[in-house]
Image (cartoon, rainbow, N blue to C red; front, side, top):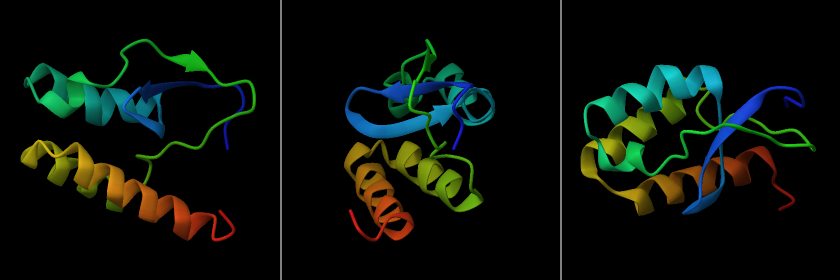
Length: 92
């Protein structure tokens, strides 16, 4: 959980938080390729006063992102992100 770094978000998926490093490694290259899903990410990072956890830090979630981006399927990504969140926080 980071409390001092900035993160990127996507208004369509409120639980999505992406650190600046993962944004530059994953989202930005897709954005430059014209990937629709990447264009939906907010390019301006924000500080979350309560901290955040990057949702794209793991190779598994990066693969999920790549699959969703290739499909152009935001619902697939939302579903996998939700499943990942539930696994990390079973009391949600």
